[in-house]
Amino acid sequence: MKACIKSLCFALVLFAVFLGMAVCSSAKEVVLYSSNQPDMLDAISQDFESKTGIKLTVVRMGTGEAMKRIEAEKANPLCDVFWSGDVAVLDNAKANFMSYTSPEAASLPASFIEKDHKWTAANMHLMVIMANTQLVPAANLPKTWGDLLDPKWKDKVVMANPLKSGSAYAQVYGLYKLYGWEGLTKLINNVKILDSSSLVYKGTAEGEFALGITMEYAAHRYVAGGAQNVRVIYPADGVIAAPEGLAIIADCKHPEEAKVLADYLLSQPVVDAVFQKYFRRPARPDAATVEGMPSLKELNMLKDFDPAEANALEKDMLAKWKKLVLQKQ
View 1 (cartoon, helix red, strand yellow):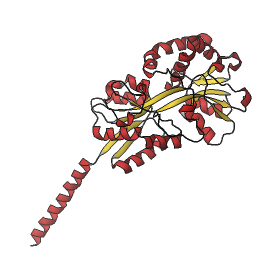
View 2 (cartoon, helix red, strand yellow):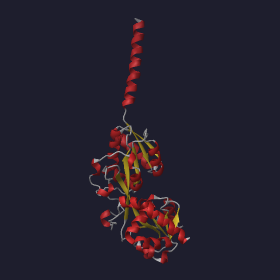
View 3 (tube, rainbow, N blue to C red):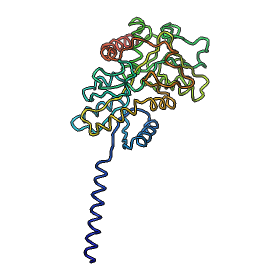
View 4 (cartoon, one colour):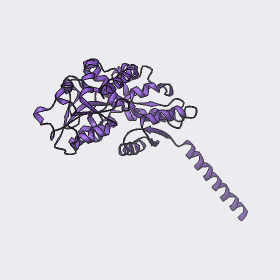
């Protein structure tokens, strides 16, 4: 009798072990590579798991590094979704992405979705002029991009290096669409070029620089934080909107879970929450507004910013930009 009981107990233990293994092997999961800020990724991870029951593993790295890793891992993808990076960079890597048409993308402009649906814009950076009113009186602030081309602003304006920064290249491309190479040449004569985007908004906020060409969310964080000396100027001659996107990795290990994550990241409640807390403006035109920030309808947006054209022109534009900068020195 004891032998029977022992055998039964052993069988039950084995059954429990195998049942546990089966549950673990069938547990849903998805892996995300992302360049977004850590606190935002933590919040997204917790909310996604609570809403879907899918475990989200996040690996944070820069967009360029992520594209290199995705390329290196293409025979055995370790990532399912990338979110979010400059769409020009994603376009160059689209051979490593699968086509997916998210129902959440129905409201997006056509230029915010890759033609074969290899990437989809999730948010966009509005390019603005950030000003420090301790150095420039409010009455004398520039109102347009064209104002920055005036020699009176020489050495008072900073921007990031477009050879190193995707957002800075978007600024260069947008100004090219407005004022051509004549305008860009005037800009080069006036600006100081810094090594990174963060040096621009940090230096302007701290009073090291009078004016900075930067991203809306980065500048607005100081305003929202109570910085009395910081102003965000939306240029009246055309606000530049540079989209950032997400993509699902080709032959990824969790394709169905990846689609769920993509839909979640593109959904209005999520993009609105990210906008509200982190000031990252959604790509969706139906997004909610945030107190203290203008709606897109209130702004004169640059109409002919074309991500595909920006990507196609990038190599030649940056080569010419570099040549003009060297001539200035």
